[in-house]
Length: 370
Image (cartoon, rainbow, N blue to C red; front, side, top):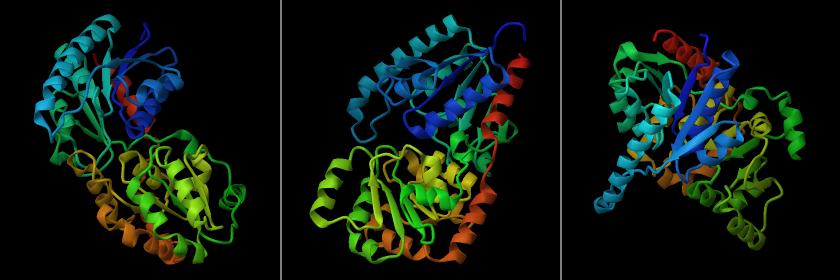
């Protein structure tokens, strides 16, 4: 390739879409350092900050999701979709990409649809075990569909599917600390078990309420707990703990800066069941209790969680049952070495390493076939 290759990467909305997108872009640059990569995201969404922070240019589309509860509100959504398609066409005409990669999220729909209509090859990275409507539609014109779970021929043409896994943040894999060192750095006793509770960068209300409802159980337990509340809930939780008292074996934070060290310290993880989180848990071989969010389209997270539960690679507690069952179960499992070993080994067996590099090579392969 004499001229630098040009790649559009589109999607975002959540860290679960953005982290894989940036990982794929980094892998392409590692293989082809002079590659020109342009991100296309949605205005006002997380990617508009995270992508530039990673060193890439991004253009935002005025796209929004459909409101399934209030259908009349979708008049403005349709207008934004029309505007987004026009913008996507202009972006493609000006940037001249040789391929467009979609990672999910609002922007990937119009961007990849327009790219395909303009004869630009497209590659979809489907992160969930249950494909969404947008990706099922985009799959008809896609050249390759990279998936993280087996059995995706239910949704996509089998000849287009490539099992790659979901790319994860590289620093999670590169952590040099031992478990004992990580636990000590946090300020806990390495002899006692550690439970890590995470609900995503914004937090998870149900998981947080489950902790608040079980403070006395945590205080009476030998389990040490790291609790990421999310920024949205942090101040209110601090006030509650100030009034009720915070157990000595509970460390509370709004955001974990060194997630690699937190994972290394943890013997058990409580988490939502987003595709990115599950990929991290599997790759690291972490036992987990998953609490699928009920607020995602097509109940993706329950399907993701069940893919692990069915292989005894995780436990699951439904959101509506979490306040009663989650913490008692976690405190029991965290002290059961047999269960922890089984969950961790089975999760590790589901992990697919080097995903970003595999997808990046497929991107370059598709470009070379033009």
